[in-house]
Amino acid sequence: MSALSIPNRRRGWCPGVRRPMETGDGLLVRLHPFGGRLTANQARLIAEAAGKFGNGHLDVTARGNLQIRGVNDEIYPALLALLESEGLAEPEGDGPNRLTAVSPLAGLDPHDRFDALVLAEAIESETVSVDGLPAKFFVAVDGGGSMPLDAIGADLHLAAEGGDTVAFSTASADGPRNIGTCSLKRAPAAATSIVSGFARMRREGRTEAGRLRDLAPELVREIVEQAGLEPPAVPPQRPVPQRAGVFQTRSGKAVLLALTFGRCSSDQLEQAAHWSKRFGNGEIHFSFTRGILLPGIADRDASTLIAEASRAGFITEASDSRLSFLACPGKPDCANALVAAPADASRLAGTCGDLLPQGTTVHVSGCPKGCAHPGRADLTLVGRADGRYDIVPNGTARDVSSLHLSIDEIMNRLLPNAAELRRAFPERMR
Ligand code: SF4
Image 1 (cartoon, protein in one colour):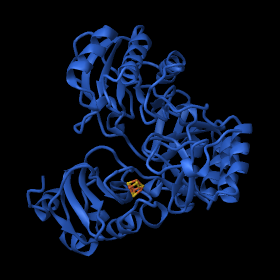
Image 2: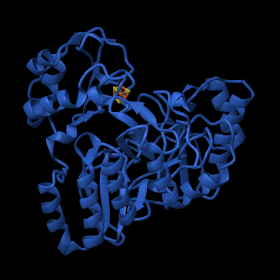
Image 3: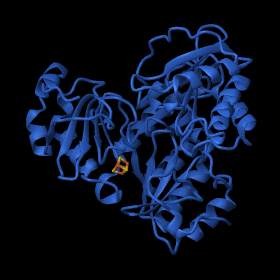
């Protein structure tokens, strides 16, 4: 067993099983299963562990990882030993705990043009010994189907285009920025070349960029050239991924259960594990949309599962107004938090949620780090030290704002539709 000593568990890094992070409610232990997938038995074990070793709260993250909250220092070694014995601890080292992220439908989606799981596995195995990657670096592998990974904020985004072509993109505030293309056959080698090239530039001191998006344009051109990418193509417009409900897959249906602000209780996870065995194929896929996908559901069972899940507190309808709101743990659960983001988001959802047009996104962030949503939202509220919020229309939690309002003032301004929402905050804020 190996874990960092308590004084080394600094806040603000990328936590894992061996590298827990101190938060306002104790240690946070993040698991990074490949593809965001667990067996129902593993999920049940983790649910029990979250109740026994933590405070019973779990989060599904915006990369489809799973974190146990509220673990205290004395009991953490026992949790680590349990997760190690189940093969759920990441490898030792300083690099990314998990290099790739995929759709929860990867391998099942009839609209995918390639199997993202296979490509992700190839990239992971070819880059396993690359030294010098920042812990937060990750590659999104997107088969081009029903659940686009455009908003996930990956350093490198590989997405299926027409025919046999894979588009390579880097993250930007406006979504993925295409840097080149290659054939599917060449994609693992090209991705490995880019990942290795970036790490080498860091090792050689040619850049201090922690993310590929921050790399100087001439260095991006250099690694694109080394990877042998063809000129970029105009990426197709893709839909916003559905965040709850039923999907048709290659083998039956899959039901995506959304979690309010990405959080569930140990009882809910245990219940999901139970449904996976009773109705599904014994697997659980965690979704970057911060929900739990249960695959292999027979047509006749989907409505029963949805009715039971709805009663158990899961969001089962894509039109549910709570899905408009994104919030991080905030106060008191995160030590960095300046405001009680989930409580305020709940107030907003309860009061104004039904008035917002479907698809509107409101991101309530406890601080400028913006953990719950790295990309743009229609409205972003960023907690401030004075307890008010910075107001950022059509921007991210990192954007600068000159309008600061209390949650009561914000609620008074929110009006029934998108145009009025924009008119409610007319000030030029950036
Ligand atoms: S965004 Fe939220 S969860 Fe992330 S550090 Fe800030 S307060 Fe904590």
